[in-house]
Image (cartoon, rainbow, N blue to C red):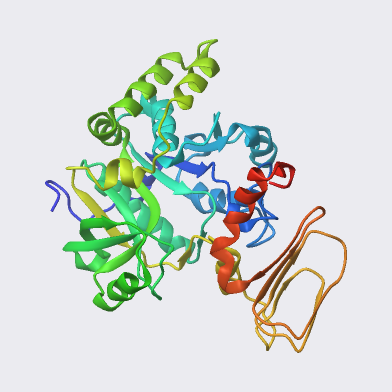
Length: 371
């Protein structure tokens, strides 16, 4: 239990005394060919009439002043992000992708001068979350906990033996009414046998990739556990506002290890780590199959049309098209059809996780223009 921390007393207005980091630097390769290097998944309108990044921002905006929201993107997408979001949030560009430890470290370094002890909420830009008010309320709970020096993450109650997510083992319960637990351990993506074991035990949650901490706490842990990253962040911090900032940033990033915050810090830290079991529906929308399962609007045979499509004697198919033409399916089952101006994907719905191999193959075979 936290010292001085009363789990049942919250001043919601204090939620504005914090920062939000939206991590928007992912590649979204499992959503090829709609998701490309120049327009990855977080910039697609696959959940609603808004891009996934816009949806994420809309969920967060009521919690904090927009000037306290920081969006981290790849430099390739900096101008696109500015056109999409305008000047109402701070946009930070990474010269190259180096995973979530560097992404969060960069954002926290920029926010450091605004307050070492204010909570920072780090959220991915490309997730789906229902019951937005519950999500916000639970974030405020996490923010209060972070002020006491802990690191807080969110776990999702498993509904299936998922092998595509990391897991969190729940430890001692901290607050039964708010579903807060100490973290016993973080577990890498399991095989099917282990995933079935985790599901039946009731002790494990999916790792959502949402984190809450203060700048002081997370930078202290990076310094202890990832000293080379910390040294790089110090160099970047000294260069902020100077003429050679971009040069320093690029030089540092070129020498950084690509490592997730989970592996870099969360699995190794000696700080108290807590997991809040989410009371909202969540999906990382990590594949076309995940999108198929998430979206409403299927016909009686389970076909989902995100385009002008006709299904005859066909079951459980997904059609997504950016091209201005009709797509007709006859006598087929469980297919993904993704039609773009220069590439067409036809794949089995169950193999949607493997679609990421296509961009890899294209790069190796001198067809990078399709990536």
